[in-house]
Image (cartoon, rainbow, N blue to C red):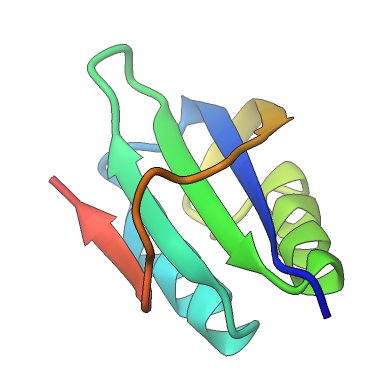
Length: 93
């Protein structure tokens, strides 16, 4: 099956609440590659690559609020063609 990549920007109370680590766990559970990283504006950027159905499951999980300690206000997404080959889902700093 074809691989799909989606870039997501998650806004709200999503930094300092374990958001990246929980997202990494969920993405790995779904068999996805990519990364999660904090941005200077207080949002979290998530790149998810893998089977389209699994990518959509992660995006739905993000939109549903992610980890319990977070408060997601909005999630913006767009298709993405990564410039590098991701072999796992990592946390970027």
